[in-house]
Image 1 (cartoon, one colour):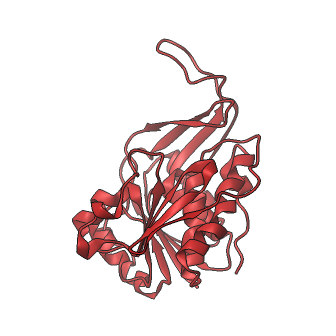
Image 2 (tube, rainbow, N blue to C red):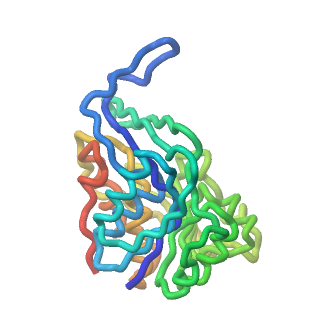
Length: 275
């Protein structure tokens, strides 16, 4: 099986804070660690914990942060296609409060691959699934995969592209992602809209109506929420590519999203995906 991820991978520095700083405060990150993250990065790493061949289409800057990110990506054994940008690579500072919630400060604009970048876009046609993209033209290229899964945060780009996703996935608790099937034109309405709701599970919306799916029975503790939604999306894409029906795929993907709640670094806590 072959799966592609098209998205941004940031240089993330994450640590604990007693509380999100107020105006004038100084926050000190406790137990800091750095790793490649971002929406594309976390989903990518989850998919590399599977037997699938994984392709990553991304973009990188020209500084030490970019070099560190690319070196870590190369160690996965996946096929990495990275467009280079003559600028500093995007960095994220992630603060985890005692309740496990995360607050993210993004330094600079995320670097996304563009269809005009000289990357092997034709390889997407051989993929069983492609996950997300920001550039509308890249979404059109991704549509050549057997299945197209898009994060709800990319809905404006998806609508501009004119392409139709098979599955759109997002969080009902995030105003940037909450949407309904009616928010898509008839010709672009996905087969399924998956909206998660944290500890209460989520809902699969299709033309047949909504269907709830449960949260995993046991919630890990001691970590943070950073990466949970993206790990769920990566696992969901994998199970859909295997041919698992969307509701069952959501049930199976749930533990993969929840697993990262047990560690500060989501890449350390991600579970191995198996058929």
